Image (cartoon, rainbow, N blue to C red; front, side, top):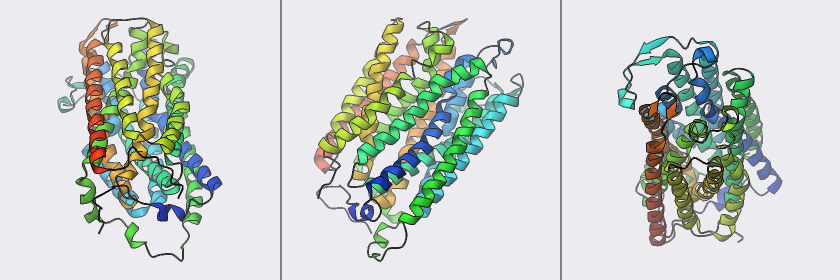
Amino acid sequence: MLTVAATPCFYDMTKVAQKINNSPALRWAVLGLVSVTMMMGYIVAKQMSPLQYFLELPTGEGGMGWTSGEFGILAGSRGFFNVFLLMLFVGGIILDKTGVRFAGALSCILMLGGTAIDYYAIAFMDPSHVVNLNLQWLGYNDPAIKLQVVVAALGFATFGVGYELCGITVSKVVVKWFTGKEMALAMGIQVALARLGTGLALSGAPKLASDFSLSTPILVGLFAVGVGLIIYLVYCSIDRKADAPSSDTSSDDDEKFHFSDMRVTMKNPGFWLITILCMLYYSALYPFLDFATKMMIAKYGVEPSLAGNIPAILPYTSIVLTPLFGGMYDKIGKGATIMIIGTVMLTVVLMVFALPLNSSVLAVSLMLILGIAFSLLPSVLWPAVPKIVPMKQLGTAYSIIYYIQNIGLMLIPIVIGGVLQRNTTGDTVDYTQAMWIFTGIGIAAIIVSVMLLIIDRRKNYGLQKANINDK
């Protein structure tokens, strides 16, 4: 049974890490492999976002005739199975019970299968085939919906199970190999490569759709996750050799997952604050990115083929800044303070986007600032979790965080899609109400991040302490 000291709640995993991370070259090679695998998933996760404009074009103009509400269903569908079928909990338990090799390979197979369904829906299904479904419980009030949308949503939901399982698995891999070392820098690099995948999707998908067809970006994504599966199998081979039986088995039982130990984590207020902060932050940011490309066209007058480049500023900026901020956190700490700064920057930018200011130069400037916020909080949030949760429960803990996050990522796009549909007159879309909703979420994130700083001072989790252990 896990016991928690009354003083610092900073779980010591140094003995676990020393078994496998003594070779710097090997651990950085491992980071590269799993990060590229995750990057491939991010390409698919965001490749539909910049295609909203094209999907909503009439079929006679090369589009699919979708509505904003139907696009909102697709954008939110990534979390359907994770939320309603509790697949994230199942995935987290699978990860902690079977290890990173099996769970990671399974996640890649699910991503591949879900992307294949998406490709079939967009490439081969007739967009004029409509079915009647009662989706009011999801915030979609139109009884009619395209069968193509339903099938694409089922594919994206399947992809979402693998995508989120891959995320928690890669996080546990990084903790496994970098505890006591450059953990925040490693997670920052992993996030940076994931952001590169997002940037490639946002800037590349509209160009591919314009030059070829709407299904071409999805075909590219299908190839990407296939490559990701192969790369992860290479990592599995390395990890298997690194995990060869050791003569030191004295602490093996201490590192095994036990369901009874989860109550310690579930009673931890710091864990729940990080969970809620993660949900609020990503619920404001990622759904905003889902609709940002069309907003650049409708509000700021950017050409459709170029509009995806402005939201792509966020991931491209974070490619450099996330590892930089992560390295700073490793050396100087102040993680809770950095979270507050990141949420404040996010909220201010979203608030300005809600104002009736239509300058494309302003839009680019705001995206640059948002890119900094996009880098600040993730660079410290994910490395903070192992300071609160022990290694043997880390997969399940990450799955709970991702589960709560998926609730926001599922519902907010559907809500925003409905709001935009109600605020559309002809070809004119008013984004004011939608942006104020995002701003409200950002304000809530600020409040939670301040609470996290306060409770860290009381519980001494170590969020303000440096990560590198030179002892």
